[in-house]
Image (cartoon, rainbow, N blue to C red):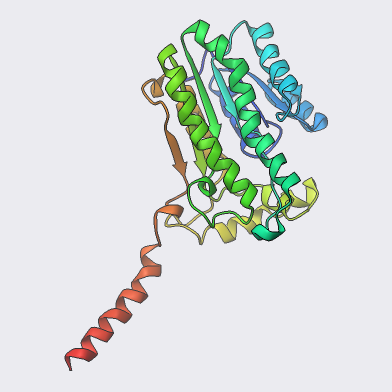
Length: 279
């Protein structure tokens, strides 16, 4: 393996499961020294044991925890080269008249405030080094309405994408790149959790989710955590040294239009109307 991240120190929030865990694994495989955070201690210890990464129990929505987590990376490794703001969670869906403002505030606290807090405390370290890469995890729901049943989640992810651009314009002058990745239909347990299932039960739904997601976009398969983790490796590496302020949409073409096979019957029907008019 090329070990594209050899010598780099990376911090990944929400690294105990799903996309975050796979990013931790891939970064370790590519030679990085990795610190990751999460609220679930037992899962964190299991991932740490399996990967050799260092676990910090933390809630990203709390600035004190963000400061603590960044501090662990700096104190243990002496630097911080990569920050991945991945931590997130499901938020209850429903119509605008039914939105819980408390749940809305929580979604913003986790996705937006959490990302901002970690960037706030990582930025001085990266600026002093004159090098660094921040990767925020957005969503296709932050680009187009209708790709999440949760208004709070969609709005929070839209904010993450724009926050990325704003910080990229500031930190880029110091050699620190800030980009985001917007996943499409990635088959993980988060959807089951959004439906109210416990962690174990939610993970059992992934196979069924894959079948459904394979029908959504031009590429006829569901997205998997590797699709996002591979992109994170690229953005974290020196190969992406001139990429800044970009949002990389990884969705198999989901938000860019209908599949040809779906549009074709409508086109054929229109042609039939024209043919009848000529008769």
